[in-house]
Length: 496
Image 1 (cartoon, rainbow, N blue to C red):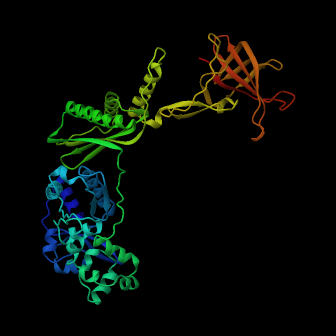
Image 2 (image 1 turned 180 degrees about the vertical axis):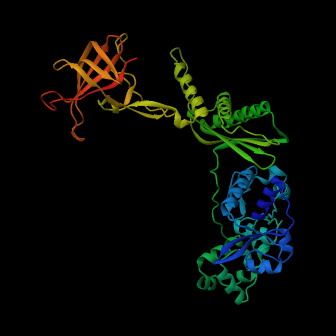
């Protein structure tokens, strides 16, 4: 795979290099080959050989340093694309993939047709592919390396791997060397020995590995992405590129998913659309909702909002040959109650929040949650707007002027008192380099800080209005002649 990655990049840039290509890495304090292309392999080179020996054999060798991060990124991209065959796809580093295709082969015309399709599709992207199908991951890996194209019938793993060399188990090289010295050169020869003998000599981990290769045991597959609650997909005989067809496909898939969710009495909270391009690229678009929904029109509109807001627009390239819609988070949903007093405003607001979250991101849309405190700056906190906590804001009487500003300053700003009345608000003060003459005032509203926190002065708040009609919310730090002899004044907010 590393040499295929380099050649794909060279082809994209128009570079031509007909020399045998190898990738070198530092292994056991020496530069050794970690990957070779087909030309180098035909000339007798193989991974593990010292680079100095390889150069002595082939002086015109093209040598590139290993880049494990780039290889892993490419392997993950191939794994994303392979999810068109099954959502259960796991990495088998450094250059392999494991696909659990249980119950999926019939969708592609059978197991042989499925392997042929995977080989053709990945091979057309410039990769050398070796595949095998077996009941366990260890058996499939061993067959893919030493007997590619093998399809093992259920329960036939032991016979299929019996003639493979011990290296096919990919055990530690010291164990492989010890098996060779003992005359055990094939997996079948090892399987014929007593388990107690093998455990005493090589450990229980090796015996478990052997049982997995023989189909007697299996380790769980760790897929890259969790299995969705439900999904629907559409394959196209010819790749599609037009926005109208893509939008219509998303709407029809949303209707199919909604039918499944309705039977379960559920709704979707997180929905993901995955677009598989014909050239091997994939693109995932996810949306979240504040409440469980299953209306196809709502899902389609939210996905369109997300697509329109992408900084990197969805590029169909040569076209999408598969579009999948999956629900990664579903919750129980109750049918909305209808009646004369049904409040449609709540539904409209919830939909607006979901649209804004799809366009700008859920973390950028917030709402205020009231706190059980009388301290002004701690009276409310912001939470994601798509969360729906119980709100208990106290409503003021109709026509009553607001007692506090709707929006406070992040930090109270100090003011300079130019003239002050005894035990009252300033008669004249300067704020932000502008002087204000107070014409009307109301207060004080005395607020004491929590006693369990660090000692802080008591605050006296006043609502004042200057001659120009501007209204301010001022407070004094400390009560005169009691706590602080010369208290400081601040403006904490302004009224609209």
